[in-house]
Image 1 (cartoon, rainbow, N blue to C red):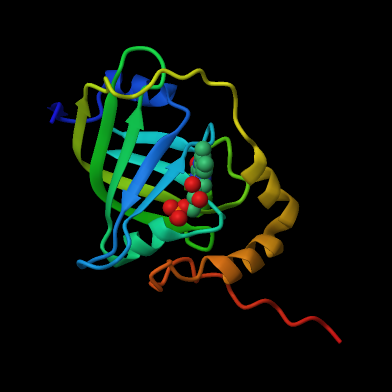
Image 2: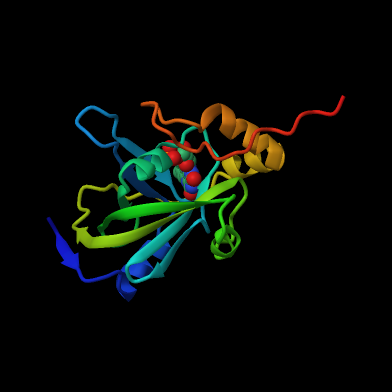
Length: 191
Ligand SMILES: Cc1cc2nc3c(=O)[nH]c(=O)nc-3n(C[C@H](O)[C@H](O)[C@H](O)COP(=O)(O)O)c2cc1C
């Protein structure tokens, strides 16, 4: 399928930088679990760290499938496709890890990104296979603009509101695997 590249070279970096959305696929170990596919790509939330490493800001949201599957086995595929310009589909296969807002190194890592509202983690992927393919079947579409709804929604909640939301919605995957369960218990309200 397509062409395999040694690394994320300058041409691929430029292609990736031009895209407004990308897709992330992960799966739990074993024959039965549900495979996840999430759209990502709020502008300023993705970076190529070096020619075999990429990262993005993982926002507090209604699910935490990617983190759950990374905890389980680390396998991940990231896909970009051209909705304008020359056709192309780029896939990055690799293993991912994540650094949460409670971990050492988070502040330094997240400072690379201009959009961090609602961040619960940064996902870092060690890319083991870089490939592209024709993209002839992907339709041409015009980019109209970002929906800022998710970062703005999380910003309105504030840090404690986001933690409460994650305690409610992000602790396990839809299959019941441990996901984002790192938030400390809320401090008791004074009498
Ligand atoms: C167009 C679009 C872009 C998105 N961009 C991001 C993003 O950049 N980072 C992010 O964490 N979630 C983003 N989301 C939300 C994710 O799709 C997803 O709901 C959330 O990140 C939880 O992902 P997970 O279940 O894969 O862990 C976006 C959703 C849409 C529809």
